[in-house]
Image 1 (spheres, rainbow, N blue to C red):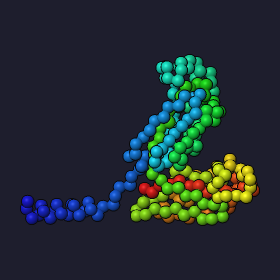
Image 2: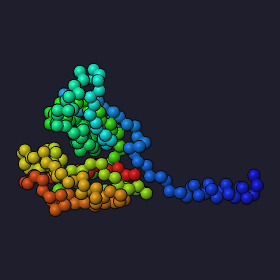
Image 3: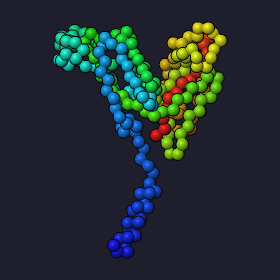
Length: 219
C-alpha cells in the first residue's frame, strides 16, 4: 500500500467514526406480529416485553372458511360501510396487554360486511410516566435520542393509581386531546416538562382525582 493510499484509507475511516449514528425507527426494525380476530370474538393483543404499537388494522372477508362462511358480495353493495377500522391504536397503544371486547367492536357499521380483523403491531421498549394531578411530568432521553410519544391520557382508568378518598371514583375518564397535547409539547425534544392539570388538558371528569399517563420511547 502506497503512502498516499494509506493516508486516504485513514481519513475515510476517521470520517466514518465521527459521523452521527443514524436515527432508527423502531417500527421498521422490530419484529412484527399479525393477529387475526373473528368479528364475533374479543380482540387480544399482547407483548411479552415492551408495549404495543399498532401498525395497521384492516378488515378481511376472503372466500375461505376463515371465521365461518364468506359473506355474500351484496353485503358490500347494500351496507353503508366504509373500510375504516375501529381505532385499535387508540385503545391498545402503550399497553403491554390489550383486550377489546367484541361488543365494542360490534358498534362498527362494517361488522355485518366483514368476517375478521387483521391487526399488525410491534412491541416497543418504552418508558411509562404516571403523574398525579397537580404535579409535573418530566420526560427525558439521553445522548442524541429524542422523545417519541406512543400514548397518553389525562384522566383516570383505574381505582388504585394516585389514590383518592372517594369510595367509587370515576374510572372511565379520558381527556380526548391528551395524545395531541403531549405530542405537540414533547415529541422531538430531549427533555420535556408538562403539568398534569386541568389548565393544560381541561377537566374530563369533575370531582375526580386524575393523573397523566404517558408512554414514550427515545430514538
